[in-house]
Image 1 (tube, protein in one colour):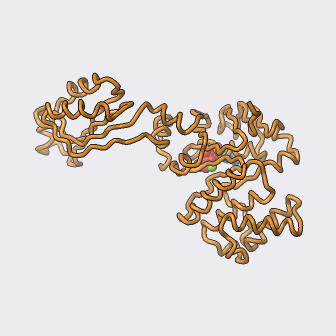
Image 2: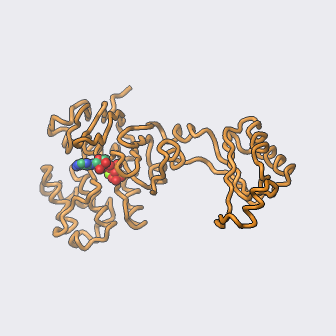
Length: 338
Ligand SMILES: Nc1ncnc2c1ncn2[C@@H]1O[C@H](COP(=O)(O)OP(=O)(O)OP(=O)(O)O)[C@@H](O)[C@H]1O
Ligand SMILES: [Mg+2]
């Protein structure tokens, strides 16, 4: 097996009494796009800063190509590019001047420098706006310039911390396509985003952080497979006492979970006719029946037969494939969009 490019080993970071990162370990292979997911405060930026060397771990070690990052060697600095969450560009310089500045920092000169600037401007779609001041750029254009700046010195790995936050769809697309193209040319990437569909579409493997811990780390495919199947959602009027029906549904082979979520339509006053009927145990309840099953198509007929027998009408029926958002919710109990 080829050695990984980045190795994060039992890394902790304390800020006073707060342990922001609590012993996290993972590896990033050469050529892969590794996603890091977590809600606000999960410890993503802190972890990224320890990989780039701007923060030292309180405990543990990060190595890049086998070299300890905290030693601050030039070869490690050259290997890593960062697109920080907080923009790191100069508003009073033009787009081109910004990139020239970052290129010069890394020793690029004359023709090599101007060629690289042109190439990066084209990659992020800013060629036509290159002579405008960065302060006049839209939010999305600033994000694109921020991305280009991190790439000027041709790093081996680029750490992208929320590169698409708050940007218009056109800029998001430029960044998204730029990332794909760079990866196609062999660049390794670490990508954090609150946009789950981006991470699902882009990343080979994903680490999920929650409260400073890495709670899962696997391929997108394996993480989703770990959810154990699709969900069938049926809008229906179930009998007031749903339990016997739910038990029969649970007994169908390959059904893993069954629940009924009643919807009362918001008029929850004690005196409403509906509540009196619910309490009496005779009225059907409107709501959603949710079943999780490995092979939903194979059990649909049996489920529908049972509902027909109970005279429970089917108002709608939906089969939902689990996605990364479901995995995240299951593992952290949180929605990323909160
Ligand atoms: N310089 C600092 N001093 C003290 N606490 C900090 C510092 N930087 C971060 N923290 C705390 O560490 C925790 C992790 O923060 P971090 O910025 O790594 O989270 P994040 O996952 O990047 O969140 P977000 O999605 O909001 O960017 C948070 O509780 C944060 O308040
Ligand atoms: Mg962050």
